Amino acid sequence: MKIGYVRVSTRDQNEQRQIKKMLEQGIEERMIFVDKQSGSGFERDGYLAMKRVIREGDIVYVDSLDRLGRNYDAVINEWREITRKLQADIIVLENAALFDSRKFREMGDMGRLMEDQFLSLLSYIADQERKKIRQRQAEGIALAKASGKNLGRPRKNLDSLSKEQRHIIKENYSKWTDKEITSVEFMRKIGLKKNTFYNIMRDYKQEHG
Image (cartoon, rainbow, N blue to C red; front, side):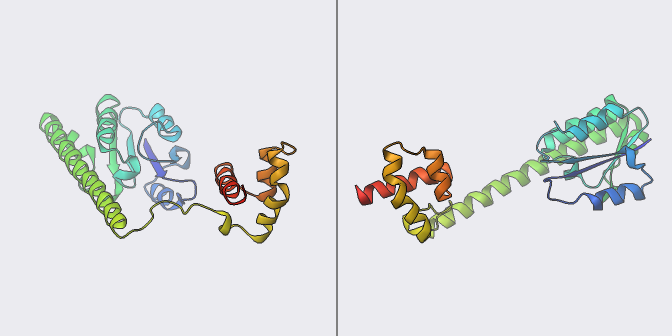
């Protein structure tokens, strides 16, 4: 049986392109499993449901290896579980010349050895890529700090509020301090979230005593 696995990282992303490719492989729509979440782990509803229906001799299709997952050590473990424990095969459509477990299976014990070496190489390359990404991020942060850039969101202060908001604070500040209105009521009147509200109130107290 042919099975398709589709994953996008967020609910805002469109999975239809991947689904179309699965249908083009002759996969029944009911056998296409879809997840809309990060690929860092494998505790995904669609993926777990797919594994429950895999039987010996089935073929699992994915669009690209990173659609299966982004933690390549975990990807390798899942690859081995599907191809060896469940006795199914995996084809990665983006590069089927390399990522087709049937080719290794046809070579018997030698193919199993070559597959292990191939997966180990994949893990090494992925690990090096992760290190490069972290290094580029660290270099970017260091450069931004050296340039005097503020990497966080700018903190709201009294001057950033509208005239109407400042008027509401002026009219209700003493009521709030006298506990005639609650903090929740006050921040709702101004239209501020909790952390911003208390920062603003601290600023207001410093300015007005």
